[in-house]
Structure formats: C-alpha cells, structure tokens
Length: 189
Image 1 (spheres, helix red, strand yellow):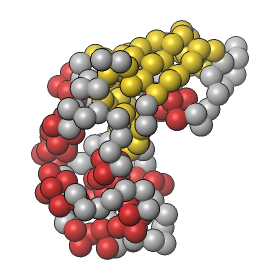
Image 2 (image 1 turned 180 degrees about the vertical axis):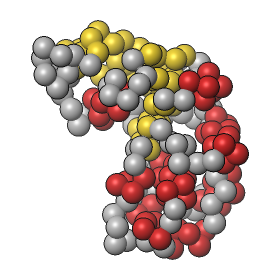
Image 3 (image 1 turned 30 degrees about the vertical axis):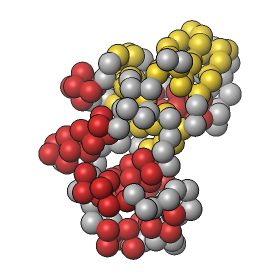
Image 4 (image 1 turned 120 degrees about the vertical axis):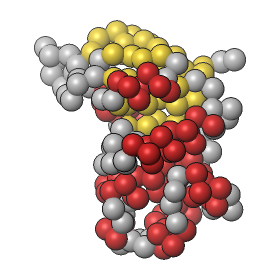
C-alpha cells in the first residue's frame, strides 16, 4: 500500500539560525495513526501548516493525499455568523451525518446554532464531524480532544479509530498517554 503522506528531510524555523526541527522524515499509510508529541513551542502545529502548504519549509518536501484537518482552536475553525450546519454543508454532504452525531455525542439541534452558542467541547466535536464528513484519505488532528472530558475524549477517539479502514491519521498532542493508546508510531519533537 502506498503512502498517503510522505515527509522527507523537512527542516523549518522562523529564523534560519534557530530551527524548530531539521531533517524530519516519516510516512503514513491508510489504516495508520501516527502521533507527533512534544512540548508547547516545539513545532508540532507548524508541521501541520507545512503539510497544508501554509508555510514554506527551509528544506525537504511534503507529499500528501486529499486531507481534512481539525485545528486546535475550534472557535477559529468556524465563521462566527453562519450556523454550523451551513458551514458543514459548504464542504461535505450531510446525508451520512446521523451515525457520526451519535458516535461523538452531539445533538443535531446544536448544528443549527452559531459557533459562539456552543461550548468549546461541542465546537471541537463539530469540527471533527465536519472533517470526517469530507471523507479525506488523510485526517490531520491538532489536539482534537483537548476541550473534552476523559469519557467523551475516549468516545471520540474510539470513533476515529473505527474509520482507519478508509484513512490514515496524523495526531498532534501533548498527551503522551493518548498517543500511546492510539498511535502506531510516536514522533517526538
């Protein structure tokens, strides 16, 4: 099976004399979860920005299949003046929404609200829902469960793991226990 993500000799720093990482290499295949773990400021979210093409590396290359992402801050992931359902409909078909809602413990009525009317945890789950409905080959998850309590976090991560038959996932987390629980490989930054 070919890789859906290939990161080869990636180097990046906001200043050339102070690199966040150098010669970072890994690949990801469908059915795998890899976790990037490190302290705040180590460059974990920067790796995602490089994969998405939002930043230019100082060296190396990134090749990826169709991906969707769940950003760390769910409030910045949605436009404040449109309902969540309208924003999900903009990027994905919603005909398969009901099973996902049950699996992530989210009521359909919440999707009819504006982002500021939801809690951070509800909004985080709506962001995961939108990303899953896009049917990516690669799912990029930046601290996707940080605003959830432990029980909901386990439910959401279990639901994500069940979809590994159709995608691969790259997880950014500072939670080493979560990474050990779900990841095939842990990449320390």
